[in-house]
Image (cartoon, rainbow, N blue to C red; front, top):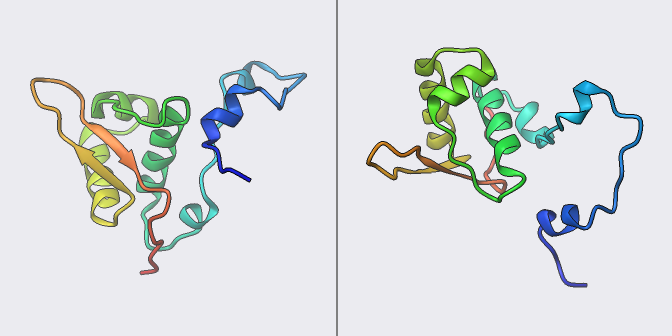
Length: 117
């Protein structure tokens, strides 16, 4: 059986959610349990990773600015920067700086090894 990317499966709409409310209509994000339960990643970094995943699920990539991340999470831009650097150091994301005032491109590594402290 040939493996397909999740975006191909989702585009087929083989799952329909009925009875959704205003909260669930905005969508949801799956975060690997290994990341959620890891004691080697700060809570803030987990939240930033989850938000990056939520942006990326539809396009296989994402490039929100740190201002956008900060606003969506409700933390300072400096805190976002700290958490993004942590994720990069630990191999969960790769940041491609695009320059000229454009937002960075974040590549999420779903196969990163989850380290314990």
